[in-house]
Image (tube, rainbow, N blue to C red):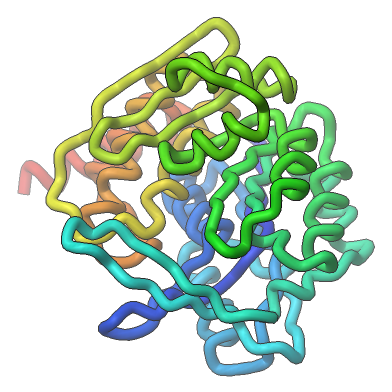
Length: 319
């Protein structure tokens, strides 16, 4: 089987927690999660820029350590991106981003044209488009992807870096949308949509010709609307360490399911399992344990891969 080619494009940065820096950025989190889950079933790339500094070198090492290809990560004179992360009593994160980071200066190249033309899925957001240079490059990349490709918009709204024009441009480029329950009202207002969560999701799908809309709702689980199919499932109860990267893990597992054409309930269940695991650990990127990969791949992966994971899990249990 030919591996899927999957790209995360946008910001690469370090989350600065009270106890020190941890690698992150939504496209990077997405790429690391999907590379760990898919293993040999996908070639995963990040398209971004880092600084010629220690954090930039560590970012490249972190991506490569999670099986992510770094051929399309540019090096820039500006510093590698950083964000100050604070957590409330329940582990919910808030963010303050450094201005004018390397990823704001992502530029177009013939190599990016070739990478776009060969991809099966690309995940992008609005934060990575806060500066004109990066926004032009990201939108050009999305337009260059083939007709069959999943164009997944994870809106990732982070005040004050929210631009309604960028949101609307991104919705017009996407064919798949992922958002959370804080972001849904903002998009509902922009689209003039009202009603229940599902009503708004269906309105967004109709207005912007979206194949799939996914809504994550924290402890209330997630909803996926895909054509006429709807899945609404509860969360998996876990002790939450923090929520950083959980939505990106959800998007990663959902992407694998959509690429494989699996039923929407299976996709939602697998995505919730991946997101719940990330909530249970500190930081955004992880090497998923066999039991989590098995839970995800049982529904989503090619038979040979998911069988191998299950056998490994069973072997461990027998010891």
